Length: 374
Image 1: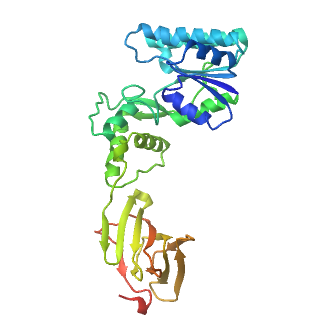
Image 2: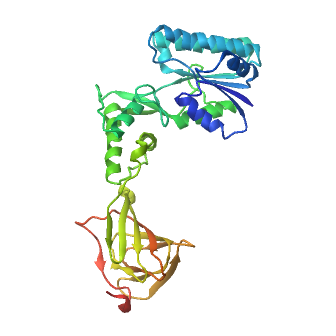
Image 3: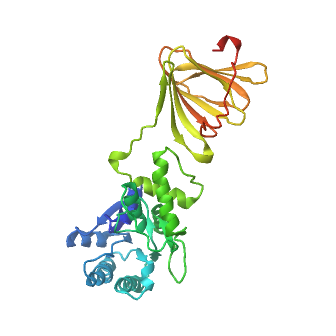
């Protein structure tokens, strides 16, 4: 198919084009720098149109009419002279308001509906609210973009009414819905409009608090609880706003003659991920836990993991090597050790069910076998 995307260099356009590029379609990307000839060619040959272009922050209110209503009418005229393809219009909830922006967006909606009545072509009209996600522009697309940009850079954030509830829709959900419309399966909303779902509601004060918690958690190598879909989407958005020259973090490395141990990530209720480096011939561990349980994965080198019930009994040994990673469970109540049997450093990723707490270490010394005791 030949797909025409207006506003291809905008927030939604970039995300949509990235998704469409995975398909076997021809994309006509039209933005403000397109020539009249390029627009005419694209409109004449288009089999489907994503009309995302619009003006929402002009220097003068008169630009609303020209950029939203007038451009839409002109585009529809070109389409009607061509194949009269289906049209998807990315509108705004502001179209319900009686202000210059809302009026211009409402006129664009009405023009698309009239195009449908004249040509019989399918049309998909959306009234979107507060879209957020990667590649959005601070101080332009949404408050979420501005908050993420400022908080990630230590800049101030102003919230006049923390209790105000805003509705948000995530860019990936919007793109998924647009692709459904392309395939003829748009989600029907109210009053003849289509819907990009889900919409999320959140108070501005809580929104800012969450974004600030993402900043603070990164400093402590903590991962937020992402079981809430909105938190997961906001966290992904915040991560996309991190300054590129500040992406690397360097947690403390605890090293001695035996090797090193580094806590990489603290994941709240989901435990902790660490990396352990053992020098050749070194044995580590020789302890057990009441409640804490772990998973060990050797990703480089060669060694052996041994376990025994702390109350006594047989010793179980598991040869491990980076060439064939194995996930070895360390249950609570089992004393355990890990020994490097190779000639190079052995690197082990370790997951523990809880972050280490020096005030409650839950760690008790006990040799796995008498000959391996320290």
